[in-house]
Image (cartoon, rainbow, N blue to C red; front, side, top):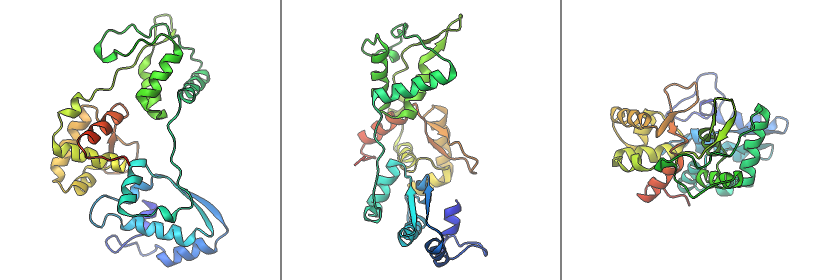
Length: 274
């Protein structure tokens, strides 16, 4: 929001006290050398007509001042792929780094470090005690097998892996912590969604979170209809509110449904990951 106000366009003019673009370039170019990290740069654009003006302006600023400022920009992967298809900007960056998926050893080290910090020492003696079909995996008998399965289902994503880990653990009446298998992600609900709901989901994953008004703008739909879509997707657990104080409320795909949602959108040719 701060960057958007500084880089205001004709459609969203700056306030009377905001510096001009040329003044910003001058200030960053003549100030002492510095490093600036900007997270969630996907918030600077929307997939719609004229929705890329602010991010274009920002990248112009980065390009004109990179002799004096080390800019480190963070984009959600899907947002970056969308931006690159619309605005070929790869040549403007000295280096593009894609965060790799974590290995089972790395995820295990993360979980065990947090367990140690909280004084939790889980037992892996109940890995195959659930009979529900949603929990039916290949036989997993050891902690090593559990972490391999965790890495596979989470696709090496530490946020998803930690969510699944919390689903796996429970205390018994004596206070001991046991590990059981987590629920297999299901795409049943996703297969019941109509085209408009799938379009809304596509926009949400490409922007890593949007308000209902922003969804309506990106898919050219009625805002009230989008409100209905979002409420339904939230009720069935596909969406969750973003942790933010911004108004209006923004939503993103929940951890539980994230990979299943990507798979469904790819299956119906609404999302391409290359």
